[in-house]
Length: 278
Image (tube, rainbow, N blue to C red; front, side, top):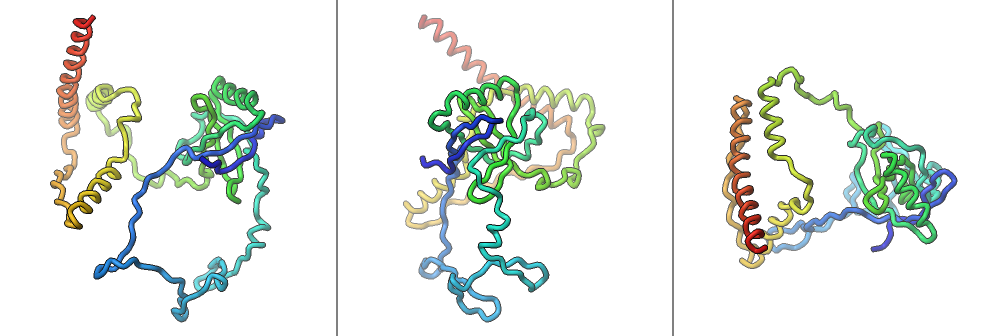
């Protein structure tokens, strides 16, 4: 995989050479807009609102609308004047406890691969972050745009996670939330039991994009059938508003208990089989 960015981590007077690689990928099915009559792909043209005429790329400029219908044109040199200095450095500003940072600020992770000659300094930063339970808050310029970012220890390496600037977060107080006093003690106790019964170790392999898989499967079937529509899925019962919360919690707990019995029985039979084999 080709590195997205190459530079250094600035750690005090220490410089650590690194390369940046995406930590995630997204599989998306590409759809085209077609004319219904002959399935001819639809193309789009750049036309001016004033007269509807097509406009070539060399006649297009960027503009900012400061009043309705009034624009100021911005040229490339205008953008260059406000460009932050692209130093090719993950410039660490300070170190903070991860628990002090709102998790909503983090949004995109990248792997940081150590560069030539940086092994010892890279390991020092990784291990000292892990030992102190802290993360590094940094500024970095990627593709001519400045980002706020966090450098975190991750297993054997370091990751850089891009962050929203705090002013970009919407104020949570704008959204409705019920008061805690509306919950009874018995309801809380049953809810805790339900949470405990549904608790387990985090297993990533159990989760995948089921909608994407189902969509691929449906498309394959439609291709095989020569374009015939797929059978309509069975209608799912719409959830109703909860009237008796306590009753629903108790039903959920009983249902969870009945689901776990076969699991325990299966584990016991496996254990007996292993004993016999031994």
